[in-house]
Length: 138
Image 1: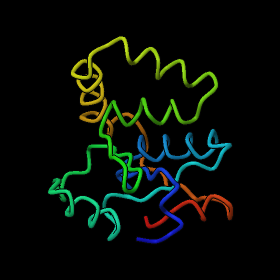
Image 2: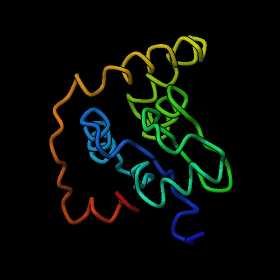
Image 3: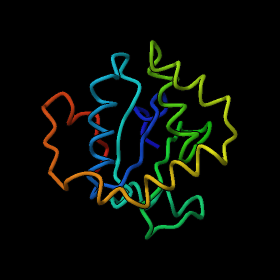
């Protein structure tokens, strides 16, 4: 494993989804502590991540958050951990998420995921030079 990945949280997302790309941009803007890197699930890196864990490699409707050699989280647990890591006011969302059971958070996540292609335009995100460094592979 690349040494520079060990201390980062890697967000795996659907590279062809407008909603997913919106949230990647949102995390990029809020990531003041430089905690996150990104890779699309369709990329070689994303496909390797999925295959090594016996996860579905052709369905891209789930967000994964991976801390190498520690854990990976999916769906609402991943979203809540991201808000926790971002800290500040976003940590409140993480705390609020602990009130509701995981199945409830995942039900909301699945509803949004199922309709994500209708919710946002499929516009192309063009990261600036600093943001490009945060992408492992798209």
